[in-house]
Length: 286
Image (cartoon, rainbow, N blue to C red; front, side, top):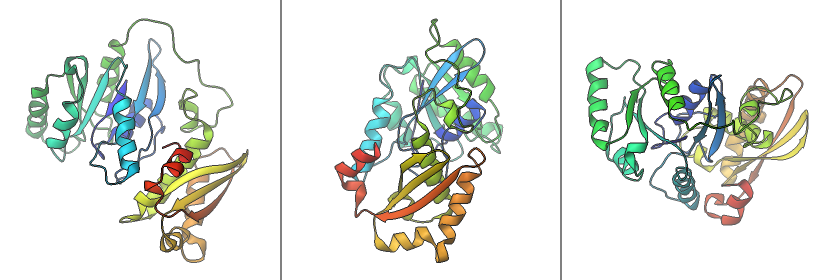
């Protein structure tokens, strides 16, 4: 089941809540999710394979074009597409643009997210707005509080075709956190590089988050080296921070989410305008 929607509607937060643990990084910055991330939820009677996708947006770079293509490709051949919209900010033309590309709509479901704090009348108004799209089912949830999420998961499980599990149980020696929940689709290197990027997103502002990419270049567990790419020399200093303060803060936050004893070395390299260079995007798997 593929989760799609505009940027910042809360797809990754919803996935984490449904999984009961963190499997996808989150932030309030657009383009946080940069790949089709797969997570496997076993409920006891069903195994649901979720695919989290980049937020659909108007691209300004080659990276943006590739992220949109990744999201749209991920809806092909799945049993159900889950279109997520932001109920708090209100349904708009961008949401309708995405909905129009999910044919046939009556095979899929729509989720109005971020209903926490919204009056009942406002929630009903948003449900009425999306109800015109012809989807099979509609749900109102809050990924932040968990309201309505249990009902959503149960409904998605009922939509699954009968068959054997696609993935075995998670390995006993898998590092806990997101890495254990990927069903083998996202390896430890990718997960750790995403953890680093998530923490950088938390401490950087304005245009810098879009210019950051992370890649694990050395893995000799428990020693890991991760390279941070930026597009300008001036950005390198911002990521390092005075006396290395930013990198130190990021490294501490990343290690706190890894098994005890893990050592993460962070370095920063300038790759001019990497968002528009196919060879760099290919190397980053984007």
